[in-house]
Length: 108
Image (cartoon, rainbow, N blue to C red; front, side):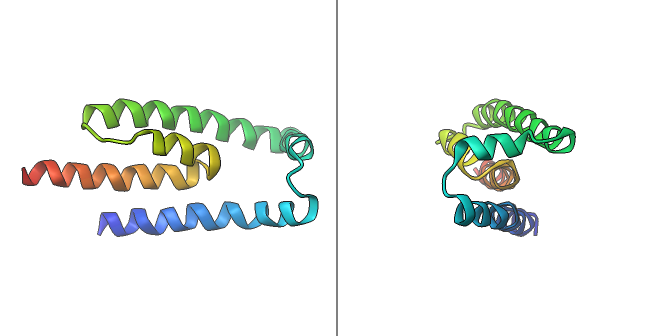
C-alpha cells in the first residue's frame, strides 16, 4: 500500500508543477532570465522559491545520508531528478526506492 501511495505522489509531483511550466515554455520559450525574474518577482514568489531551494538541499542531504546508510545505488539519479523535475517528484521517488530497499533487506 505504501509504495502505491508514493507512486501516486510521484505522478502528482511531476504533473502538477510541470503543467504551469509547460505553459510558461509555450508562451516564452526557454527564457531563463524571465524565469528567474518571475521566481523572485515579489515577496510571495521569493518566499516559495527560497522554500523550494532549501527543501531541495535538505532532500539531497537526506538522499545521500539515508541512501548510503541503506546501501542504495545510483543516488545521482535523485540529484538529476531534483534539478530537472523538482522536489515534489524526487522526494516520493526516493521514499519509494527507499521502501523497496528496506523490504529487500527484510527478505535477505
